[in-house]
Image (cartoon, rainbow, N blue to C red; front, side, top):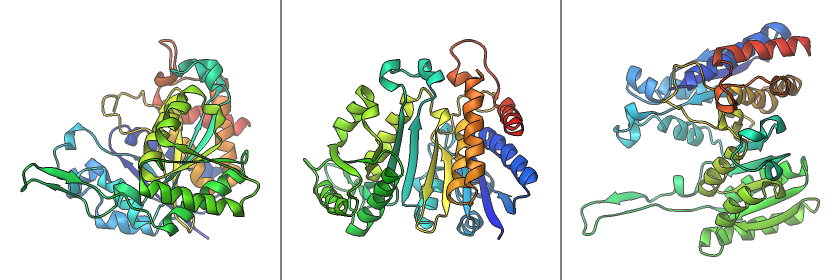
Amino acid sequence: MTKKILILPGDGIGQEVTKSSNEILDYLIAEYSLDFEIKAMDVGGTAYDLHGSPIPADVLSCAKDSDAILFGAVGGPKWENLSWDDRPEQALLTLRKELELFANLRPAFLFNELASASPIKNNIIEGLDILIVRELTGGVYFGEPRAIVKDEIPNYAFNTMIYNENEIRRIAKIGFESARKRKGKLCSVEKANVLEVSKFWREIVTDMSKDYPDVELSHQLADNTAMQLVLNPNQYDVIVSSNLFGDILSDIAATLSGSIGMLPSASLNSSSQGMYEPCHGSAPDIAGQNIANPIAMIASLAMALRYSLSQPDLADKIENAIKVFVENGNRTKDISTSNEFINTSDVSSKLIEIMKNG
């Protein structure tokens, strides 16, 4: 059965890193006669400039009809003064909401050869391997009502943080099952000391733990988790959290690795349809310079092969090639500790060569 892949390069370095992952994908399709149907379309600021919308209707329709979406990055100073509905970030938010991509999986891992690139001492981060499971379609980012009120004195603004039981149970289920496949430890993160929503979250997750006696469940306040990720990150295996706290914690965890240019992510719905994207942004300051690190985008392709495209062996092949690539001393500018580095356009060919010889 044909698998449909939609490629959305977006803005800034999204264009460059997606080109690299496309080259890997083209190689795999040719080498293994994969029955994949590929389509590329514009989103974000690029789409706004060309079509007047950050996510045109035909893009959303095609996304809904795809098995996997490879998403580069969106945004940049050029579009900062647009109205909220026209901003490039609406492409991401709309796709998450319309495709019901409620589970964001963000691994944070360290190649020990790159420990010197991390701002954290080597003895603290050596062996780092964490998975953060973030709820992606609820909470304060989507809660209603929300508004900025300027017709009253003083002016004010408000958002609504809300979760229902079903939303908590489905993301906690992903957390428990992910922990079961790893080291068997799940840390549920919230702010139950001050927020009713978090108290409810803790109550539901605790109740669910009875169904996972093989998983060690702990609870932790979000501010403490942020501190502990820097002081002792290896205490964690899987972290599950709400949209807001998961957003913050996953960025902290990504920084531990030395470069967010190395880390992929997956956003999944209940039918294994997924959107796959690097953890980094559009980085307009380096766009077009051929120095962006495409590894995160290529690793996101590997996650797509694993979770949505029924090709786990090829996912392993890409991930093993990345490991060998790093072991061989290849460094893009963001992870180089010297003035020597390879360009974005050189990465895919080196990985393909490794896969051919592997």
